[in-house]
Length: 172
Image 1 (cartoon, rainbow, N blue to C red):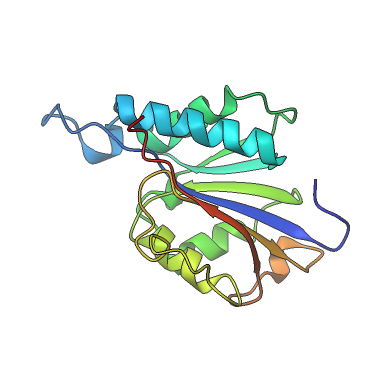
Image 2: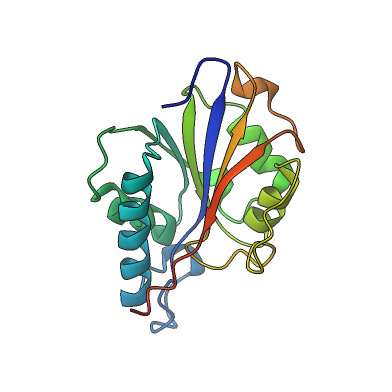
């Protein structure tokens, strides 16, 4: 939970997706085994840190929805409002910001795609994390950033404070 006067964004790129069926449209690609392991590790990490989204804004792609479904299987105490947002599929920064401004809960998780999500992550905090993978924002990368605002409609680039940045590769 975030204190009064704060908003928290958990910004996640979908986990690793499968490429083994060339007939599938990009939008319909599921996670591969490595991606499911990454998403499970991410969910456990979120639960261990108390990062409990109260609202989830998720791209309509199969891989983002599956990423959330696996994360949601972690021992999270909060069951968030879930919103599938078709416009987040391959969205740029302007669209992502516009969707975030429609959020209604103090702690929001947004799941999306590169390159938009890495650009969005880079523009949100006042100071980016000194993590080598931050600019690349690999699959299952997650930024937790807090804003000193009362309403998501007031969120602006460059005003966030980084609380955490993590990535899971699912190889172990």
